[in-house]
Amino acid sequence: MNPIRVHISLILSEVSLSLPSLVLVPGAWHKPEHLTLLIDELRGVDVHSVALSSSGDNPADLGDMYRDAALIRETVDAIDGPVVVLAHSYGGIPASQGLVGAGNVQRIVYLAAFQLDAGESLLSSVGGVPAEWWKIHPDAGAGEYMEANNPVEVFYGDVEPEIGRQAAARLGFQSSVSTSQVQTQAAWSSIPSTYVVCEADNALPPFAQELFAKRAGRVVRMATSHSPFLSQPAELARLVRDELAAA
Image (cartoon, rainbow, N blue to C red; front, side, top):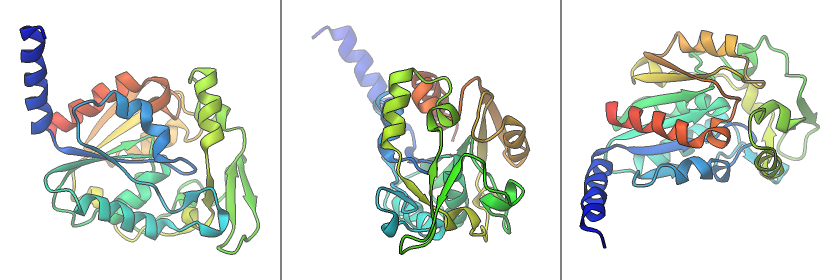
């Protein structure tokens, strides 16, 4: 093997080992596999992802926001060393709820996410009215659940069409109760945070993101739809590496 390449590889390995671990929290309806393109761009980083209980393929098995918060905390607590958590969209709510007192979390990155305060819920933060693209189904044994109508347009506006179609086909159902449960605490009040505004977002309007971003210590912006992990995974990975290095 070329000795120069070996030397560069060793340097990159040493840099990666010095970085915090990364925990990825997907948004509503989404699963860890939606984040694969981003994870592929984060070679050398210790990446963990959380499968939220409130999203899944069987409506009768869906959990709620508080269970999601517990799963995030369990994932973080199992990591021996510093951690940065990147939470997308709805995932920002259980991350804020579950990470209070997590001593190894160095920073929370809210990616087009709901950075809520104690006493707020997703639904209350959008005026108490479900979005028109939420398709709500009646009780399936564990409560009402939702599908996302027109997900390619809503979530993946700037994603390559075939990738967007594949991502939409992988979406699960979302428990309705997860959108109305009140956040009782806010980890970002004691843990440093960064907000990533997605400026061409059809799911969470940029003006709402700008309001949430006022709660963050640092704000960056991407000219993307709601899902830069699919449309601009390399650029998002560079941003994430910067956050890891600065944590």
